[in-house]
Image (tube, rainbow, N blue to C red; front, side):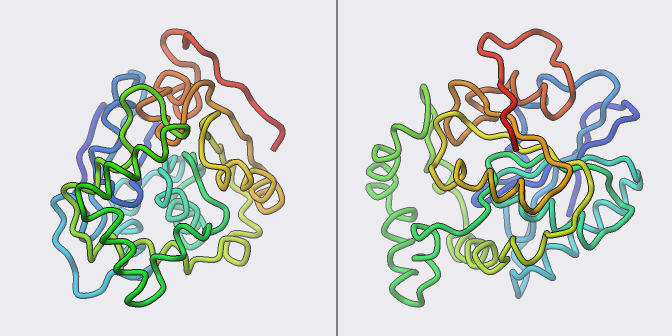
Amino acid sequence: MKLDRFGTGPRTFLGIHGWAGNRRTFRRLLAYLPSDATFYTGDLPGCGDAPRTSRIDLDTVMSAVLDAMHRISDPQLTLVGHCGGALLALEALRVGVGLARRAVLIEPFGYAPLYFRIFTWGDFGRYAYLTTFANPLGRIVTNGALVRKRTGGANLTNAFKAVDHETALDYIRLYCAMRPAERFAGITNPVDVAYGERTFAAVRRSIPFWRSVLPNVRCTELQGAGHEPIREATEQLAAVVFGAAPDAASAPSRETPC
């Protein structure tokens, strides 16, 4: 996992992108990077500029993440996971004891909803995925159908234009197989969950789940945002990730019982 570094401050952060993402997922957030922080980003195996390995499974992916954490070598590290990358951030806390202190989970699913699981159903699932995300018309129709889950010019399927679709399928299979309720019970590290006010129902319904599994969790609803808060509520999200943002957000976030 080749790392890009931004900033030189003593507080360290590692961004872990999600499904169809890459190391550039966090670029808008970096505009709010405080002077006392350093933010690392990298491409997971098979994503962005990282070559595809012979296997895309949890062991392979976590090996890359843990190697990055060892190279950063800061026990106070904060992991910042986006969407599927949020599950990987929690897994890194679970297996990489002592390598990080905290995690920020952006738009994390606490369970795999049917509209994800369908893509894991053998040949039918593969066809459903390719029709939805590999086909330009399918991306347009899907993004249009998700208009209530995004704001402004956000495009929830745009990232799929340039991905390796077999790799993307492997990642959705990986996420669906992780079973968060069984894996993450007992993680006592401080965790922040940030989710958009207009996000998917499955993300909102996951909030009580994270409360039941993670004893030291704080949840923040990002006002006006859909499923892409890095783009849609950058200032609010920066306040969650880094602490108080340099300038107050025009639509302040709201902490919710979690």
